[in-house]
Image (cartoon, rainbow, N blue to C red):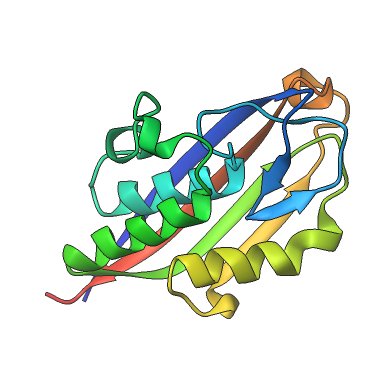
Length: 160
């Protein structure tokens, strides 16, 4: 069996007039994330980690932001399509570990729903998906409520 690791990172600007969707969960907050799709930074970072582990490019290559078909689409749909692509190339996702960096809002109460949504979308057991949160202690763009960032690593396996 061949094991491979991938890394993904995504950042979206916080703005008024948009929903805040993270891990497929709508979070009550006065600001939302700006993007072509639902701008789900957690799922986007995971998609890039998974694609990277399989050497299959990145999220923009597979789901470009100039394609109207992806306008306001749920990132969980993109995750399902990514999981299908990974499987077509003979890989399976072993585990995911992701962190969301946000000063506000507090996200811990939504962890289980985020893990459930992402594990389902990627066709995984929830026990193999970790989602963590950290605050930047009022530093940088995340600390100044300019954006939210997520970073993720994924391990994939392939029988050889």
